[in-house]
Image 1 (tube, rainbow, N blue to C red):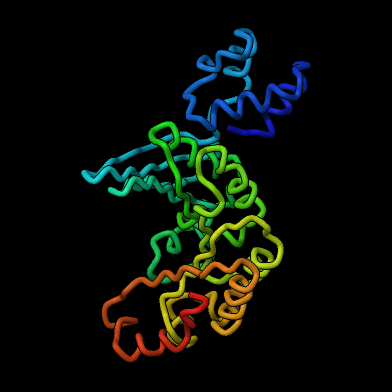
Image 2: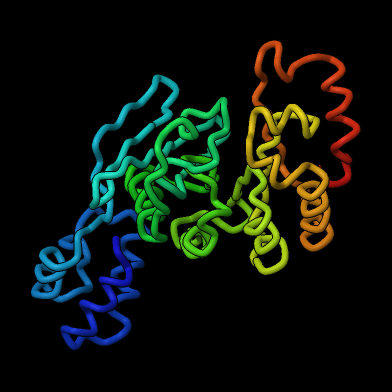
Length: 270
């Protein structure tokens, strides 16, 4: 739901400010349409159904696996693809993986999104609508910004969306933002974000030489700078950084590379 459009529409109709909060509370609890919002006047429900689309995204395809995982492909209003996933675990966790961009400009060699043409950043409402889609399917309690795109390239919209996730049942401590190491955004995340949102580093190589081959962004922002920001994050939050590492046969999975990885990552911080 385009929350800016919702607020503007309500103001233009002369509604009181609390109406926007009422609508959001219903949406965050998993409401599927305006008609179910019984504490809104009928005339307002009908007007909103016409003037404010219930989602900024159109569901193009959805598939559910035998273990309960649900993968959704959406289209934005201007036709760009967006993917998101709901992961159901036996211990009761219901984790959503959301995208921050359509496509990605950073072209990591092993990533399917990196091989796509970059379209654009997503708005906070478009990010939230991925989460809200799954909230209508299940009670969600964890979120990871590990879908399409680099969150640190769209940090303001990512944070605006993340700050609303507690209303869906996902606390800040159960929200993780991943980065391949876009340093300007990472610095801002470490220095400015007050909420206890978790940080994940998409690493995939223990040396600058190999990482620059796999992830071109590393040539611009090498490992030493990323590790420094991660240690600052730990010093400020007292929370370890989660490390992502895709095993590529014959590329980054040798024993000596594991040793280099152990030397690079201080277990106090990672």
